[in-house]
Amino acid sequence: MSLRSVVGVVASYWGLLGFLLLVGSAIYRLSAYVWELRDYELNYWHWSLMLIFLVFMLYSEGYRGFHQKLSPRFASRGKALRQMNNFWFYVAAPLFCVGYFYATRKRVITSFAITLMIVVLVMIVSRLPQPWRGIVDLGVVAGLVFGLSSVVYWWIRVELAGSCEVDTEFPEERA
Image (tube, rainbow, N blue to C red; front, side):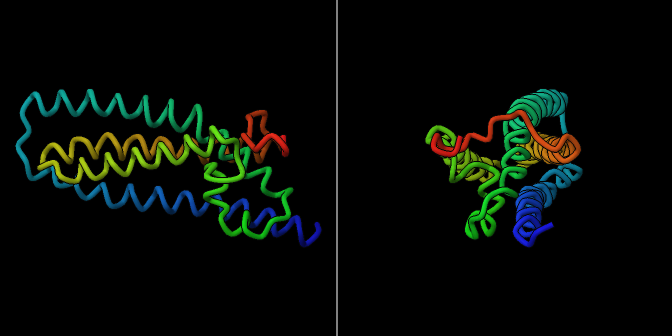
């Protein structure tokens, strides 16, 4: 194995690790608000809304957002990163794998738009009083845990298969 391929493999795993650490830190921070729910006496409407929002987030964020869209593309881009010879792609591998750069115009715009939407929602939810914040954060944490599990699942699937039939959404000149 050449030095270039070793560096490519290390960079792709840096992409995975960096993303897992970023999302994992969000899960850790939000979990504190979920644990605070133990200090509140929740009524039946709290429990009902919690269950509805939990199912909604598991489906929309975890399954539709991560498992069907981000995770397979992330694994595919991580695998493709190994064949590239670009120091900056290696350094910014987590961002590369998500699709913030070296992607189609639509992918870059979508990645940044989703990030902006998340930032705005975080700012809004951070102003909610308990128990509402904990209820929302429970759904978010569940969706993120599902999502991280999905990223790892797709990563292993691509590793074992040796390739991925999912579009990397590279710019046209690369495709």
